[in-house]
Length: 210
Image (cartoon, rainbow, N blue to C red):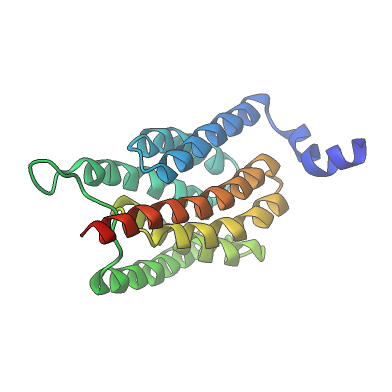
Protein backbone atom coordinates (compact mmCIF):
# COMPACT_ATOMS: atom_id res chain seq x y z
CA UNK A 1 0.00 0.00 0.00
CA UNK A 2 2.81 2.37 0.91
CA UNK A 3 4.51 1.65 -2.40
CA UNK A 4 1.38 2.62 -4.31
CA UNK A 5 1.02 5.80 -2.26
CA UNK A 6 4.67 6.72 -2.84
CA UNK A 7 4.28 6.05 -6.56
CA UNK A 8 1.28 8.35 -6.81
CA UNK A 9 2.18 11.07 -4.34
CA UNK A 10 5.83 10.63 -3.41
CA UNK A 11 6.91 13.66 -5.46
CA UNK A 12 4.99 15.94 -3.09
CA UNK A 13 7.49 15.20 -0.31
CA UNK A 14 9.78 17.86 -1.79
CA UNK A 15 7.04 20.47 -2.31
CA UNK A 16 6.29 23.35 0.02
CA UNK A 17 3.04 22.80 1.97
CA UNK A 18 1.72 26.13 0.70
CA UNK A 19 2.11 25.01 -2.92
CA UNK A 20 0.35 21.71 -2.23
CA UNK A 21 -2.60 23.51 -0.66
CA UNK A 22 -2.72 26.04 -3.49
CA UNK A 23 -2.75 23.25 -6.07
CA UNK A 24 -5.58 21.56 -4.20
CA UNK A 25 -7.62 24.80 -3.99
CA UNK A 26 -7.00 25.52 -7.69
CA UNK A 27 -8.20 22.02 -8.57
CA UNK A 28 -11.41 22.42 -6.53
CA UNK A 29 -12.27 25.68 -8.30
CA UNK A 30 -11.24 24.16 -11.63
CA UNK A 31 -13.65 21.28 -11.11
CA UNK A 32 -16.39 23.72 -10.13
CA UNK A 33 -15.71 25.73 -13.27
CA UNK A 34 -16.02 22.73 -15.58
CA UNK A 35 -19.17 21.59 -13.78
CA UNK A 36 -20.77 25.02 -14.18
CA UNK A 37 -19.77 24.98 -17.84
CA UNK A 38 -21.52 21.64 -18.27
CA UNK A 39 -24.61 23.13 -16.65
CA UNK A 40 -24.34 26.20 -18.93
CA UNK A 41 -24.06 28.48 -15.87
CA UNK A 42 -22.26 31.83 -15.82
CA UNK A 43 -20.35 30.76 -12.67
CA UNK A 44 -17.99 28.88 -14.99
CA UNK A 45 -16.02 32.11 -15.36
CA UNK A 46 -15.45 33.45 -11.80
CA UNK A 47 -14.59 29.98 -10.49
CA UNK A 48 -12.33 29.41 -13.47
CA UNK A 49 -10.57 32.74 -12.92
CA UNK A 50 -9.73 31.79 -9.33
CA UNK A 51 -8.36 28.43 -10.45
CA UNK A 52 -6.31 29.78 -13.35
CA UNK A 53 -4.82 32.67 -11.38
CA UNK A 54 -3.53 30.21 -8.76
CA UNK A 55 -2.18 27.87 -11.44
CA UNK A 56 -0.38 30.75 -13.19
CA UNK A 57 1.52 31.39 -9.96
CA UNK A 58 2.27 27.70 -9.33
CA UNK A 59 3.30 26.90 -12.90
CA UNK A 60 5.62 29.90 -12.96
CA UNK A 61 7.22 28.55 -9.78
CA UNK A 62 7.52 25.11 -11.40
CA UNK A 63 8.90 26.67 -14.62
CA UNK A 64 6.23 25.06 -16.79
CA UNK A 65 5.88 27.91 -19.27
CA UNK A 66 3.48 26.28 -21.72
CA UNK A 67 1.05 25.32 -18.96
CA UNK A 68 1.40 28.76 -17.41
CA UNK A 69 0.50 30.42 -20.74
CA UNK A 70 -2.55 28.19 -21.04
CA UNK A 71 -3.84 29.32 -17.67
CA UNK A 72 -2.99 32.96 -18.30
CA UNK A 73 -4.94 32.74 -21.55
CA UNK A 74 -7.83 31.04 -19.71
CA UNK A 75 -8.01 33.97 -17.32
CA UNK A 76 -8.13 36.53 -20.13
CA UNK A 77 -10.69 34.52 -22.12
CA UNK A 78 -12.80 34.10 -18.98
CA UNK A 79 -13.22 37.86 -18.83
CA UNK A 80 -14.19 37.84 -22.52
CA UNK A 81 -16.49 34.84 -22.08
CA UNK A 82 -18.19 36.41 -19.07
CA UNK A 83 -19.07 39.37 -21.27
CA UNK A 84 -20.26 37.22 -24.20
CA UNK A 85 -22.41 34.94 -22.03
CA UNK A 86 -24.19 37.90 -20.42
CA UNK A 87 -24.56 39.96 -23.60
CA UNK A 88 -28.15 40.18 -24.83
CA UNK A 89 -28.80 39.55 -28.53
CA UNK A 90 -32.17 41.26 -28.14
CA UNK A 91 -34.33 42.65 -25.34
CA UNK A 92 -34.89 39.28 -23.65
CA UNK A 93 -32.33 36.72 -24.91
CA UNK A 94 -28.65 36.28 -24.10
CA UNK A 95 -26.05 34.68 -26.38
CA UNK A 96 -27.30 31.08 -26.97
CA UNK A 97 -25.45 27.79 -27.45
CA UNK A 98 -24.71 27.35 -31.14
CA UNK A 99 -22.49 25.54 -33.64
CA UNK A 100 -19.41 27.08 -35.18
CA UNK A 101 -19.84 28.88 -38.48
CA UNK A 102 -17.46 28.28 -41.43
CA UNK A 103 -15.76 31.56 -40.54
CA UNK A 104 -15.26 30.47 -36.94
CA UNK A 105 -13.87 27.11 -38.08
CA UNK A 106 -11.24 28.95 -40.13
CA UNK A 107 -10.52 31.15 -37.10
CA UNK A 108 -10.09 28.01 -34.97
CA UNK A 109 -7.49 26.64 -37.38
CA UNK A 110 -5.70 29.99 -37.33
CA UNK A 111 -5.68 30.12 -33.52
CA UNK A 112 -4.36 26.55 -33.36
CA UNK A 113 -1.50 27.19 -35.81
CA UNK A 114 -0.68 30.63 -34.35
CA UNK A 115 -0.48 29.10 -30.88
CA UNK A 116 1.92 26.41 -32.08
CA UNK A 117 4.20 29.08 -33.52
CA UNK A 118 3.92 31.26 -30.41
CA UNK A 119 4.67 28.47 -27.94
CA UNK A 120 7.53 27.24 -30.12
CA UNK A 121 9.04 30.74 -30.06
CA UNK A 122 8.66 31.04 -26.28
CA UNK A 123 10.18 27.61 -25.59
CA UNK A 124 13.04 28.36 -27.97
CA UNK A 125 13.73 31.73 -26.34
CA UNK A 126 13.82 30.22 -22.83
CA UNK A 127 15.67 27.09 -24.06
CA UNK A 128 12.96 24.72 -22.83
CA UNK A 129 13.28 22.04 -25.52
CA UNK A 130 15.02 19.76 -23.02
CA UNK A 131 12.29 17.12 -22.65
CA UNK A 132 9.83 15.36 -24.92
CA UNK A 133 6.99 16.77 -22.81
CA UNK A 134 7.71 20.22 -24.26
CA UNK A 135 6.49 19.03 -27.66
CA UNK A 136 3.29 17.63 -26.16
CA UNK A 137 2.83 20.86 -24.21
CA UNK A 138 2.94 22.79 -27.47
CA UNK A 139 0.12 20.73 -28.96
CA UNK A 140 -2.07 20.71 -25.84
CA UNK A 141 -1.63 24.46 -25.46
CA UNK A 142 -2.94 24.96 -29.00
CA UNK A 143 -5.84 22.56 -28.41
CA UNK A 144 -6.86 24.28 -25.19
CA UNK A 145 -6.51 27.77 -26.70
CA UNK A 146 -9.07 26.88 -29.36
CA UNK A 147 -11.32 25.14 -26.83
CA UNK A 148 -11.37 28.13 -24.51
CA UNK A 149 -12.07 30.54 -27.37
CA UNK A 150 -15.02 28.43 -28.54
CA UNK A 151 -16.36 28.07 -24.99
CA UNK A 152 -16.22 31.84 -24.52
CA UNK A 153 -18.33 32.14 -27.68
CA UNK A 154 -20.70 29.44 -26.39
CA UNK A 155 -19.97 27.04 -29.26
CA UNK A 156 -20.77 23.37 -28.67
CA UNK A 157 -17.56 22.25 -30.42
CA UNK A 158 -15.52 23.59 -27.50
CA UNK A 159 -16.19 20.30 -25.70
CA UNK A 160 -14.46 18.27 -28.43
CA UNK A 161 -11.25 20.24 -27.90
CA UNK A 162 -11.52 19.92 -24.11
CA UNK A 163 -11.98 16.15 -24.35
CA UNK A 164 -8.93 15.76 -26.60
CA UNK A 165 -6.76 18.03 -24.45
CA UNK A 166 -7.90 16.45 -21.18
CA UNK A 167 -7.15 12.91 -22.39
CA UNK A 168 -3.61 13.96 -23.34
CA UNK A 169 -3.10 15.88 -20.08
CA UNK A 170 -3.93 12.99 -17.72
CA UNK A 171 -0.74 10.96 -18.35
CA UNK A 172 1.27 14.10 -19.12
CA UNK A 173 0.74 15.72 -15.72
CA UNK A 174 1.23 12.40 -13.96
CA UNK A 175 4.59 12.03 -15.72
CA UNK A 176 5.51 15.56 -14.67
CA UNK A 177 4.84 14.64 -11.05
CA UNK A 178 1.57 16.49 -10.45
CA UNK A 179 -0.72 13.65 -9.45
CA UNK A 180 -3.54 15.82 -8.12
CA UNK A 181 -3.63 17.83 -11.33
CA UNK A 182 -3.54 14.60 -13.36
CA UNK A 183 -6.58 13.34 -11.45
CA UNK A 184 -8.25 16.68 -12.07
CA UNK A 185 -7.87 16.23 -15.83
CA UNK A 186 -9.20 12.69 -15.57
CA UNK A 187 -12.36 14.06 -13.97
CA UNK A 188 -12.38 16.88 -16.53
CA UNK A 189 -12.50 14.26 -19.30
CA UNK A 190 -15.70 12.66 -18.01
CA UNK A 191 -17.31 16.03 -17.25
CA UNK A 192 -16.40 17.29 -20.74
CA UNK A 193 -18.07 14.24 -22.32
CA UNK A 194 -21.16 14.85 -20.19
CA UNK A 195 -20.98 18.55 -21.07
CA UNK A 196 -21.03 17.82 -24.77
CA UNK A 197 -24.04 15.53 -24.37
CA UNK A 198 -25.89 18.11 -22.24
CA UNK A 199 -25.19 21.00 -24.63
CA UNK A 200 -26.14 18.87 -27.65
CA UNK A 201 -29.49 17.97 -26.10
CA UNK A 202 -30.12 21.64 -25.35
CA UNK A 203 -29.18 22.64 -28.89
CA UNK A 204 -31.26 19.86 -30.47
CA UNK A 205 -34.27 20.85 -28.36
CA UNK A 206 -34.02 24.45 -29.54
CA UNK A 207 -33.77 23.31 -33.17
CA UNK A 208 -36.80 21.02 -32.80
CA UNK A 209 -38.81 23.89 -31.29
CA UNK A 210 -37.95 26.09 -34.25
